[in-house]
Image (cartoon, rainbow, N blue to C red; front, side, top):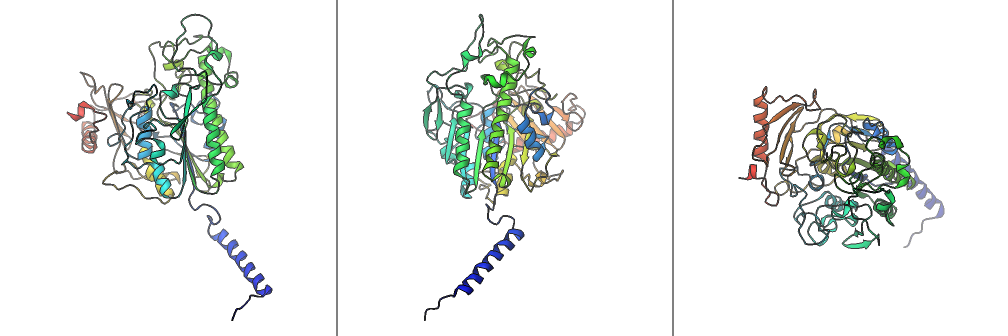
Length: 509
């Protein structure tokens, strides 16, 4: 016998379902939306600790990033994975610090191309993007890659990204008007009249427009990133935005330059390329303009999330791959004409990009997680790039790689992001960097041990600083606390693994 539900009964069933949905909506906050948050990870390039308004900058305007900080948390003792681009990104995406990381310097792949791409990640390594893919996330990377050419195991498409658009090779990224950008594993011409990132002009008038062309790459990249958001509103996504600003060469749009005072550049005048990269008639204004342009792009991402109605279920992390660019031969400017002294880019910290001093590796970091992170808060918990893999994996319910094959050097920062000011870290944070003369740095609690010049004939001695009272690293305490130095040195030597593609003779011999 076939039974048919009468209309009154059907109406009662429908009403019951509606009541159940309302109850679930109040008892289970994630009902009707993704159970795990969307994740947007924004990485600036060579942005200093003190170059945002929310980190004390008074000359450069960064309203969108300042608003992001007011909506989330500032991490004031956060460190990059390395003092330069490629290894820092490797630490971020693999969760392994420089004692274990596959990529430990800015070595090119050597494939003979004008833009060869950097040394590739291996097929065996598990990246953060692959972890997100395993959880059903759409994954997109837009910006500067630097971890392997498109025809290698290090291609972003072969390392967990469904979509990539931007600069595969860091050398191509030295120009903001390059000949092409990489789209997945092909290239797209964006400028018929590209501008190379290196040129000097010892004499004659310098005009900013002489170093511009048809399409400004950061805008083209941002358009593709926003398309990715439009296309993935109905599923969880991981959006990785390794932006190129404010890395030199300085080629910002005029609209940003015009917002800054002419008087700034009266002291030294035009930059003629004395420290490499491209000339500029107003180098101080141009450097500020690059950071304002970066800020504007962050604002566009935030606005898109709002317009799509997904901002409340999206975790945003903003940070920088290393500190601001270092000084050049001409002491009036830093490399590429950057005005890092004028802007106090490190906020008084010692050192710049390429060093393991605080100014080279301590970076701004802002995290917004609606409904979880208390707005307008600050965390002083020491943390670094190796922590993001276990942290984000925990947040989305993922599984870490096999610890025997890929041990994690970081910790889960979720407790710190939710307000705990003390987090248990069993192993010190470590950096081992075989370039720029050779560095090793170890941080345990408030203690930081450091050695420099390890690639020279006369390696430096150990230095030791108490960062709680001496963040500027002005008072070397190594002579007073030799036992602490010995303990940290032993921890480093017991932890490190040699990496034949990035030899460090001081330790490998």
